Image (tube, rainbow, N blue to C red):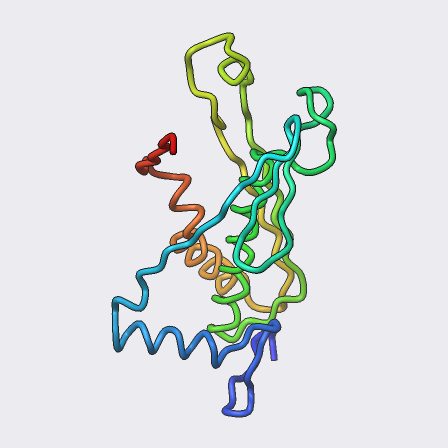
Length: 178
C-alpha cells in the first residue's frame, strides 16, 4: 500500500485520530463559520519560590519551576521549555491530523526543538529582548508514504500551526494588574 491507507466508510481512525470527529468539526465550521471562533484559558497559581501551577480545563495542574542554576528547585520544566513543548505538541497534532486526513499512516514522529535565549534582560542586566532569539525545529517523520507526500504534509502543517503562527508574528499581549 506504500504507506497510504485506503479510506473506506468503515475506517473511523487512522494514526489513532478520530476522523469522524475532525470531519464533523470541519463541516460544522463550513456551515457556521463563527464556530471556529474559540477562546482558550489557563490560570496560573504561584506556589513558592519559582514554582507555579497552570490550571487548564479539568486537567491536573501543570507544574513549572526553574533549574537550580537559575535559582529554582528543578521540580518541573520552566516556562520557556514549556513554550518549546507547546510548539512541538501543536506541530504533532498538525502532523497527526493532516496525515490522517490525507490517508498517510505514520509509524513514527519526533520533533526536536531548541531555542537560543540570552538571560541578560531577564536578570535585569540589559534592556533588550528577554525572549528567544531563534527557535530551531527538526521534524523526523517515519512513514512508508512517498517523499513528496511527506514534504506536502510538512508544508501543510507548518502553514497551519496555531502555535507556530502565534510565535512567528507580533500579537498584542495585554498584561494588567488586577
